[in-house]
Each structure stands twice: as structure tokens, then as C-alpha cells.
Image (tube, rainbow, N blue to C red; front, top):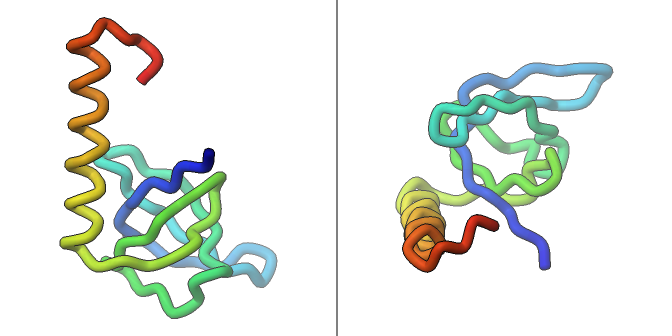
Amino acid sequence: MCLGIPGRVVEIFERDSIQMGKVDFGGIIKETCLAYVPETAVGDYVIVHAGFAISRLNEAEAQETLAMLQEMIALGEESGDDTA
């Protein structure tokens, strides 16, 4: 199973002629390849998998996904599952 995580693009730049960005994942900023979503702008939300933004989504969809992920983490903590 693959898991893509939503994040907010805070900066866009080029490296070796490839569109890159800095994406904020709840306070953790990671460099991400934006080549698959070239229409992305600063402030947009993207789904990132293995360092590549694979799709764009609106803020409401991103917040809904993040809330579900937080819920899953909380359920794992309640059950004593430390794999989350």
C-alpha cells in the first residue's frame, strides 16, 4: 500500500531544470519534486509520495485528510500500537 501525505507548498524553485518546492507538513518542511504537477503555485496543497508531488488538492480536502490521519494516530496510541 502506498501512502500520500498532503502538504502546503511554501516555496517553488528550480534545480537542474526540474521544478521543485518546499512543502510544509504541519511544521516540517521538506523539499519535494513538483515536476508531475507543474501548475502548482505557492499556497497550493499537494499530495506527496516518496518525495514527489503526485496531485493537487484544495485546502478543504487537505484538512479532511490530515484530520483522518490524526485520528488514525490517536486510535493507534489508544490501542497501544506504536507502529503509527
